[in-house]
Length: 307
Image (cartoon, rainbow, N blue to C red):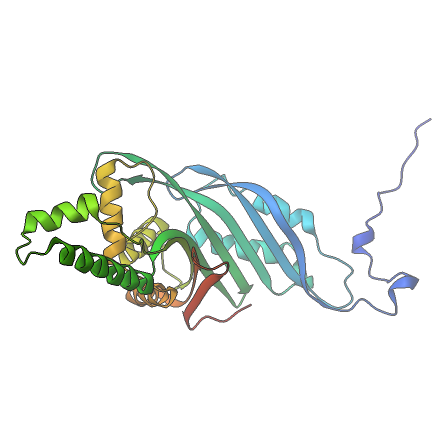
């Protein structure tokens, strides 16, 4: 005997609220998914693991959205290189998948961009993975693309450097007075510095900058070039494999680029201003203090509105 089974129920598609839900379904500003494991194809054809957050608004009278439709569209991101035009097309497709129940979209794609980095002086090199987020938000009337880059760098405190120099000068004067001679040649001074002096060390910290860029419609992502520009501005990006000559060069760069968190934020803001395809930006800087048990932070922004 052949049994004809009724179609499976679609509870989410129901328009009539259950008694426990009240008289009607109210509108919601954001419904979606976070932390979806995906893989996307980068501009050069490399396929990279990533995660996605996606959400839409929900009109009044609708119980829920079609999450599986959003998922299927995101699952195809490794089929072709991700370009600005393709990201925009994806945004419109995500909205279309919900028909007339949703008008606004938020999408964030998070990945680590691998870049090979050379040492400062030697032939040593190694990989750095740079956290990167591509966000898309808006409606069919207009979608805004935001590229957020995260950079690690070293920052040496100007105040502690001045105090260290003061203490070194004080110790030198004491030693020179003990020698009871007016003729201390350059070799004697160099010997004291290299073998006899005891030096206070300026405190340094590993620091991080998160740089969110609102991109113009025709702007390429170009994260590697933008990272290079920001690291050149800071001068002290963290290193991978180094030899002693590289470590010495890194110490010299830190000494020549003393930075409070305010200084780093201003430097990075100036670099954002220099990129003509950036419509707005937000720079957040964190210096993980080695002197204090708290962090020092600074922000610079222009034409950047929160969601």
